[in-house]
Length: 136
Length: 82
Image 1 (cartoon, helix red, strand yellow):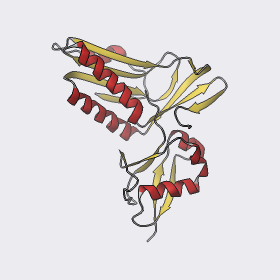
Image 2 (cartoon, helix red, strand yellow):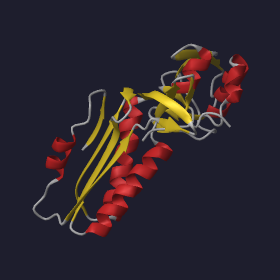
Image 3 (cartoon, rainbow over the protein chains, first blue to last red):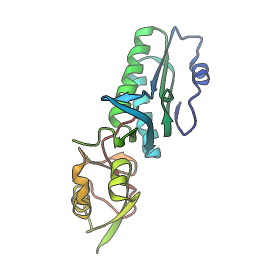
């Protein structure tokens, strides 16, 4: 299941959705907002997305992961809007029979999301702001 | 016949132009590469961005893809999700 949402991510609900009697492993990766980057103090992150394409690109990544690994259930949830320190920006969950597949698929999904999905974050510092990755 | 295409802007491109969508005049059979050239002429401030891709109807497009006025076109600055 793929979700792009302005609401806080419900980790317990995501875990319940991943559970399967055939699963021997469930991996959940959480990307969370930290309070500093490159020695600058972060106040908040502001995410925006090109919604329809963000969802279709995340679906492509999930489809590719399903081809490469024997995935029983997966969930991808990405936030948009304003996120404060400690909030979960992204949740990737994968259930598989064995742990190696769950670790690998989870890592593949988050790494590829960062490369291809049209979602942008602005770091708002206590003394300025910048769109991440945008400048040379 | 001249026409124009509407281009959606996000992130740094929206901040730099002050608009969330812009109309770009195009010649018939214009390609994605022509659109990028036109946009850079209209908005020289876009030159400060590390890279700019174009999506057409929700899919990443090559620079030689031909545009039509009914296409949903979006400018994609470097992504930073996750």
